[in-house]
Image 1: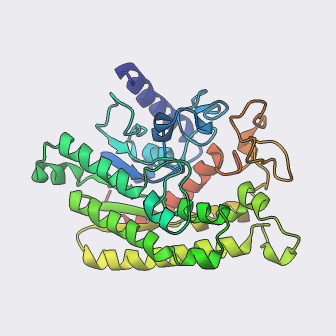
Image 2 (image 1 turned 90 degrees about the vertical axis):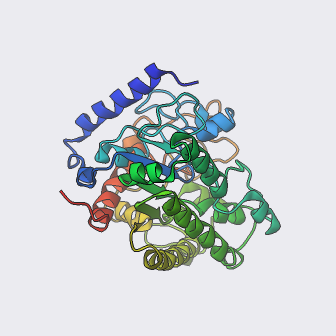
Length: 365
């Protein structure tokens, strides 16, 4: 159970980190938005501890996760901070505590994201012959948590809730990658997975409608980044066909699929904007943010924390397993554990994304 002292320490840490980072990135770019809270839905790109409370035995509950910044595992699937932490810093908001962490200070928002989560429910995936192996806390479950939290926090007072959420930022995702990734890892083809896209997009669009109904006025909806550049894809789908790889040695077929998803997501965001003229709904382009890293030389194909194979990745001996060590300087690599990125990669992506979405958030100085 969290203590008030732990929450104070986390707030102090986030304040000190902002002071440290201010020399490398413009101070609080999001300050013009005057945000006072943030509410996060999603998967391992955003989870700050919900999965390790659900299942304390998962890999990211063990060292060396968290080694670079916290010097201990926090449930973040990286060596340190995630993109959402940098968004919080740029907005002047403390790091978000996970919803499942009892006794936390939720006065500046809540993180409902769960590592391994899917957009559609586990039962919906099972009907397609796909198993969700890590968690059943899909997007609809996270939204139910959000509803429960708001009912308690605002005592079912809709007017009070709307007033207090008018300066909040809602992030619906990134979500959906695991729906497809689990399908691919369980033998489905990209053509088969295309039939899942309408369901995934519908669940995400319904989530946006739901948070707007709760009172959200600024909603950010991220797309999926080029996951087929990561060691897990490069290892599982390795081929001798050189034409299967792009200029960055990423698997073209799977990244083309990701762009297919993202295009459909952008189309539905346009529809949502038309439906909700009083809300600001912004697409966060994770795909091009990650590609920017690649084009600027910030890329290596190997995982920092891993063992074996061409890419320092073995799914049977994952980071956090006994005798699996991390590289001495994670800042030099993009890949952390073969599935997730390093703190520095997330920092650089967050800077790119914040600069990209800021003009569309309609903030005034």
